[in-house]
Length: 310
Ligand code: NAD
Image (tube, rainbow, N blue to C red; front, side, top):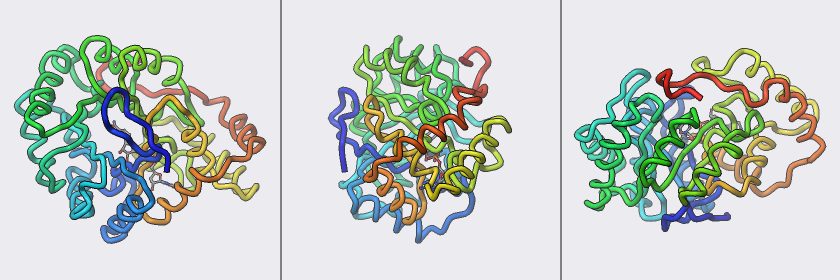
């Protein structure tokens, strides 16, 4: 396993990170024992970076990850979030940030997290996040409950706005760098690098579109984007290639981010993603898949408050 330092933190994270949202059944029902096996296999194979949130499965993902990490907490770098608690439930206030972390620590069965992130900043008021949420998180850091603090979200504009306004340690950006899109590279990275902020790339499979199974019902992408994903999967199948492995390989080769988070809840997918990490992709297949996806490349959807849209 290869590791990279997250920005200016002292966190050395595996370039393949374990996204724990599927443990909360957000991509369909999963088997908790199998989820635990997936977590243990990942750790045994050198994956040390785990990302979760109270939002995933409305606390279920944290609960299950906490159970799986019992006895193994010291082997991992653990990231969770605050501010988002449901599809339409947000609270970025200082008191809620503090109570949220206490609750997360209980579910995760630990007394500190390595990274506490504001979840989906585009649903918040920028002034509140800058003046209230981040300072509250710094106080929790001073108390030793979170080693570092960061922000997450989909549109790039609010992530950059916050990064320019207040010191933060990390940015998690999702669905903005993979085979379907790459504006994170040209738009977000220069700002993050200017401030020494570590960047985490999430959803290299575009939240399921770049998989055989396809997108879940709740996926916000347009039908054109989903259809392009299906055509890419079909092409790969016909050539004996796994689209997900190809897509992840593309992300793992991107050197400007510390880690690529992939959602996992089964040991089989952990194995496949480790295989993707270790196996060079076929450049000709990659070229043809990119051509299939080209008509919808860099298509984005609106997320959050209107004033925070890109
Ligand atoms: P993803 O693009 O990683 O896709 C996950 C889906 O792909 C799941 O259904 C999973 O079972 C499946 N999958 C994984 N490996 C596979 C393989 N080899 N073959 C076929 N299918 C495979 O989407 P994601 O889970 O949303 O993103 C990864 C992680 O990033 C999340 O779990 C979360 O930790 C983080 N994330 C954070 C935010 C945020 O903070 N706002 C947003 C999105 C993602």
